[in-house]
Length: 341
Image (cartoon, rainbow, N blue to C red; front, side):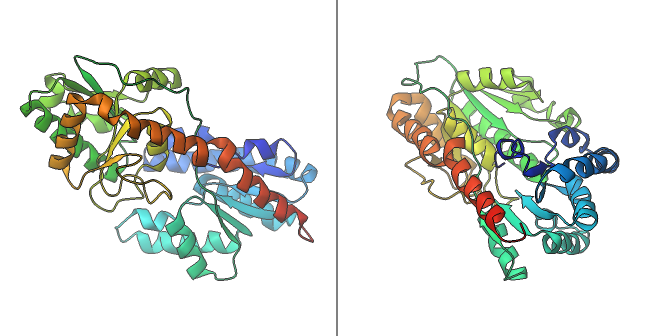
């Protein structure tokens, strides 16, 4: 996500990216409640804030798109779509035709589109050739540099992702398969699976790898617990071997920022630019190959430290907040300077 709060403080932008409402979106009823609550709370806030702000209303997702549309109509404000997600690309059900129309409608009503997805950028430009579309990469905060990985009797691997995502549930099946293969190789390891909602974890809890303690489902955890887990982990897993909803871009960047050795399938990074397999992470074509790479890392962890360090350096250089904030702020400044903005 772009660092919108840094801009919103200046009073030029009314930022509608409120993360609280995302906690209600684990069910269809939750989505409806979130949308209703957001509209009831946000629209009055928008009206008051927009009278003070100069020209921009910003939305990030479905829950803030409707209030943004109301503000655009009533207050004649410019609207920025930040980190726009095209929902029609994330479903294969008949509902995708409705979502496709929904996506096109909100892209049409948006004055400026900012996205971190190069494929979304291409698609939006195809839909609306004259629409201003800006590509700005996601950012994360790099952590303090680690030394070489210590010698451990047991190595900690980690997978992070929402269990409500069908693509992530396929990835978890791959995690369990990976655990079985590593067990057969008689390697001492443990895999933590982080993400909720907890109800989706129930089918996995009877798996042999979970029952014997090789894989642990932790559900949704606090930020401090997440940092502790990152500090003890050696390997970050992205077992995406088929085209999915764009991989796990944010979590992939977090793995690199915490100097983990990242084991990824061909689609784990979601087409992030500048990230090279064999240089910043290890790529595997399937679960069997991933298990072989993991086994070699466990046997020779120091030999792979240069890859983990190269990944962390890439974050500092290209994907840190400092690096991604600059083009984002330049875009907002260019919009502001336009006549009538």
